Length: 216
Image (cartoon, rainbow, N blue to C red; front, side, top):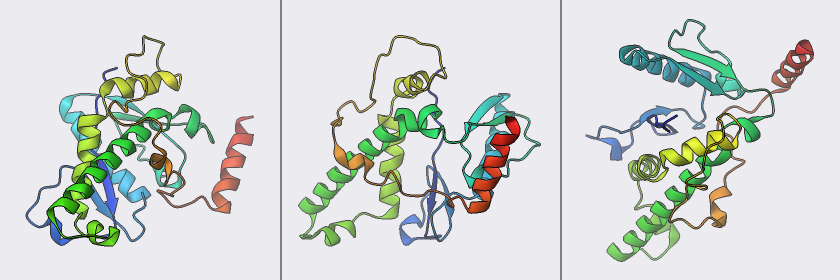
């Protein structure tokens, strides 16, 4: 395992903000009114990755959770073998929740704080509202992309697979992935409960229970 990183997929609410004009985004970008992941976005993303892997002559195993956006996986995928984690085990078995998301958010917050201070020094902005207006959607995307590509190390990614029990134990070289970011910083979990896809309906929950009972 090398801790190789894939290009980020960002979902926003603005289709063509002015700050995007004349810019080639270094991330994949999709739009809907709620900024949620949807099954159509997920399928489109999978199909694009399928083509990339075919060109590189690679095959992968992709582990995903059981959120509603992942429900309509294309059965014709050749290079991607999609496997679903057992229900209610995301926080235990998913490497992203095991220590990849947290340092990414911490590094992004650091970039955001530095950008805010830069805006304060360069302009006459004196209120939080004034400063926020100086940071565009493009700026936020670039800070997030930099946090992912430059700050979250491959070692951190590998260690998270080990922490979740999906990789055999080896010597851990870097535990947190936060490096120069304060590990005790409290603001990195402020939006942990923010939904990123459509919440499960009663129908979804009943279907999940029937699936579990069927296995037993």
